[in-house]
Image 1 (cartoon, rainbow, N blue to C red):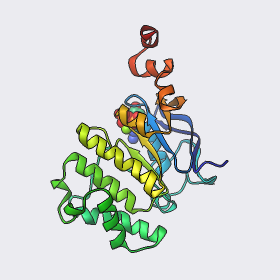
Image 2 (cartoon, helix red, strand yellow):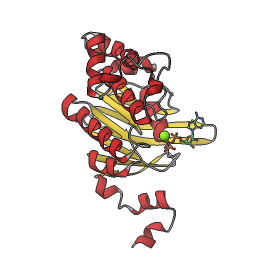
Image 3 (cartoon, rainbow, N blue to C red):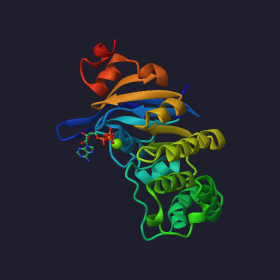
Image 4 (cartoon, rainbow, N blue to C red):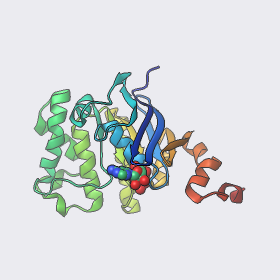
Length: 246
Ligand SMILES: Nc1ncnc2c1ncn2[C@@H]1O[C@H](COP(=O)(O)OP(=O)(O)OP(=O)(O)O)[C@@H](O)[C@H]1O
Ligand SMILES: [Mg+2]
């Protein structure tokens, strides 16, 4: 069966460094796929390649078997593949609602409906309705992550690429954000690729997990299985760590 989203041997070089090196990825319709790996593994670069903000050195990205790579980023959004950013930077001079409306303009063009309705729906979904008129600077980090989710939802995506939407917030907020991610899939039917360092969230949310290290995919499978693999333990803890644990 053709996966909803796939990368084929996707690679990106920066000077002498292969940040992403020959990665094959497949996302099924309605799936939540976790992407983990140590700092600098190439996770964010992989998202930049899929979302069209960075051109691959080689390889390709396919949406339902059709080539996505080579399209400019706004056309990728129009096709329904939308990323959030690890460093959340909303437009500071727009209100919370206006930031979401920027996404809703894409969503309305893509899937129909009004910009105002899409904006209100996304704000309510993300629990930000009462912050609509405020500047984003009044939000906490968790609030800005909710805003990033609302902006992405407003684009009416089929595939969401979430870059650390849970990391860095309190345990209670992390649980609330994880619940939102699950609802995106369960209630909205959005397929999700999720980069995340917060292990409890990855383990409970992901149907499947892909592990990157130095640009390579080193493991793939069920969340409980991949974290037991010696290669994965070594990638996180260094050589010899896997033996030391047995
Ligand atoms: N624009 C760039 N120019 C040069 N090198 C880059 C660029 N972007 C990323 N890199 C390098 O590519 C490698 C992968 O970076 P990337 O940000 O994709 O990692 P990551 O897995 O998202 O890490 P983290 O968990 O810290 O967010 C790193 O060595 C990084 O320094
Ligand atoms: Mg990153």
